[in-house]
Image 1 (cartoon, rainbow over the protein chains, first blue to last red):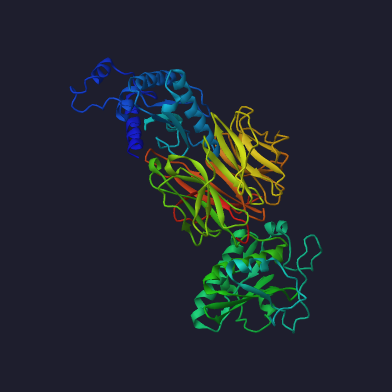
Image 2 (cartoon, rainbow over the protein chains, first blue to last red):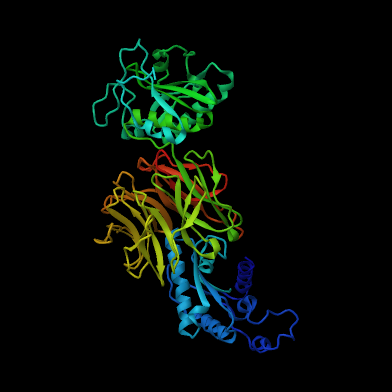
Length: 162
Length: 466
């Protein structure tokens, strides 16, 4: 539950910073990861917060689609690198949909999105055994509102630390 | 019993006895009346000016019915007598096929064994329902009711029920079903329930619980506590049981839930997610989807042997399967052709045919209990709609359109659908958002919200007599 709430809060923060995708990881943050003593309140390396703040925990999809965008692939490349750095971490990849589809179809579509993200990570060398997928269909939105901006936020696959 | 008249036909009421511990006996027409009216025979000629018509005519001209409060000599039962009358009135009026004449219009106080038909015809009543309530001792209640055809001045039906007083609401619905059946020549749907998902809490942390209620919204009961998300409850065709999907343990899977014992059981161990369950019309197996990689296949699981049979393997999304009432065919949705459309296939998985060809996407196909129609959700042109088509895809008709409506379910007589309607969230706090269960006649008239204590989605209408 805490993980979910953190994910949602982080999403709002990211939205404020740019349109859809997480900002690229800055050099200063990456280099600071190894020591973790210099910053008073930074995320713990390898943690959920670290994934959200410094890597990008989610990728977005077009309406009724599960193909990864170039931005999505870039985010997953960073996730793969991050998972390589923290081999003890396992993740859940959750697929979600906007509510412009029917309940059961969206459960299947959310699964397809989660699997698309997971398959990409496997291709980038992440062991399949470290990842599980789940679909919440249209029932776990991260953005409220019946407009294209909210719907775009809700068509995603979100990685979270298990 | 002494008041049984063997010249009157038995009817389906007797099948309900065991379920609520009620006994029903037929009441003969008072001796002063020449004879009772014959049972309604669909298609047969009916006496002129008789209240007995058919559904199509009643849609255009609802049958005017008078329904004075049931009488009782027992002051303790007076409230219940009025409530029984009110439940029957509400059932008939909500169907849109009856016009219950307001009690203020009634002339005189009709207390004799035979109604003063002139007083009822004077206010335009064609059918009259009278009833009497008696304390039968030991907590038992005797409810007598008679249905009269006002213009020919005949008794159409007379029945006495003896049951536990706690069943008064159910007896009221059963009486309303008898009235519906005797006047329209088809089974009613009032003694039924609706299982659904009760939604509460803020939109980003929605709590979803299973809930069940009578079809008129009464007797609402929550079946799960909301600690895990639950979706898509569907009734067993005969038992007091549902199948549904739960995220219990963060593992989305299909379960069965015996409502009598409260026992829940997961339906098998699968690598992927199982979802979109429905019982076979014989109740012996469940058809559902299971994910396989990015695709979703349709399978059946036999409930006794747990044997699994895979029916589709397209690699696409195949889901929302539903049997025809005779079990010989299955309708389902698939995006194998590029987007979400409705298909039918044989129960064995062969002979797959696409049946939806209109503009837009089609999903949630549900076969009518009469076998004649498939109800669906259509998405296109910026909105959602609920419609019906024949099983070969012909004669598509849209019944209701809205920003977001979906998930039709059939009343057991195949004359009414329920679905859910979502009104949009106007701002990022979700203001304006609501989900309601709505019923509608299959001709698209008489759309009505069913009152629920919380937001409500994904209804499933029970069979009659459960």
